[in-house]
Image 1 (cartoon, rainbow over the protein chains, first blue to last red):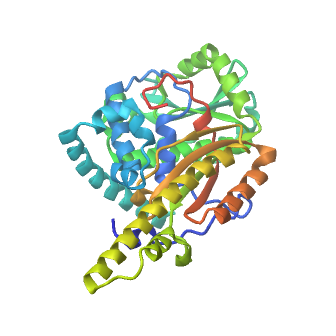
Image 2: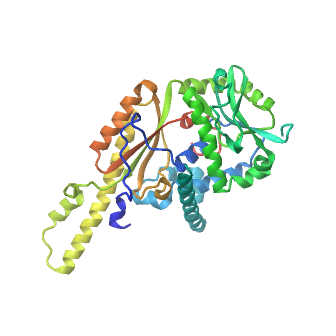
Image 3: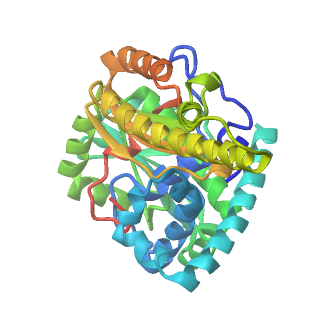
Length: 118
Length: 270
């Protein structure tokens, strides 16, 4: 990793507190919450759980890129057996990393577009 | 499927306070563009919306959930409705894509799970969720970096090649030490802020691109904070920002209490 890249590209204003306005929620903040959290109710449409797991794994890789994590030495979710079974598999991981790169650039484009819209 | 060929999308469950929703949820366009409405049973109120089978039926949903564009749009709509509801009182958010064939299904769920909903509501009542992230940054004052001290101890270089290697080693040491410092700060910050919160949980750090940041994220935490302690909590975030030079902190919220209402039987990591 290059020396200068530890510095933020665009310095965000430090949060001065809720009264003067915290940071707006980004797409990742929303997705990690609406997909994983909340009471689980079995509705009348049962989306195949396997499908949802695949979806969520993809998002996990988008949200928490493995390379970023190893750079800073944080691996909280790698201890997560639900994810690490796939993440640990070598060739599969390369494919996922490639997909991760593509997804990340798409998310970035979407974020930029939604900023323009908003 | 409902009589008119659609499905009932469930956003969340709130207490028996349907009256504020008589006008719809403040004119907010919900998922699929339909106005959210409410269904009341067992002294609970479900906030729901009507969605079409072509986009939200089982087969379509499975396809659409894999489409990041659709997912982003839908997640934002789901979140926006919950945000509006949460401003009026505690709401237990449903996971994305909780769909029923009819209002009767929603009513049945409210009745069957009434105790779970009430318990979840009591946990989040008069409390709000806040997100705190920490990014690893290099302090503005280079003299304060551990690497500079390490370089100093090694004495003067004896040639251009050695000088280069020494400089490079010092840079690498500084970089490594800065990360170690940032990581240590992240753990301290997480623990210290916990003192002002009722509950806390960790999310995996987000990738730099997604977070709109180049600096590596070293902490991504959520806290459930009592309303009367929110000021204290925010002040603590500011204070920690000043005291820990190797991390930059950001605060988001208040969030609907997504992170503190789960019942633990879902497919996602806990």
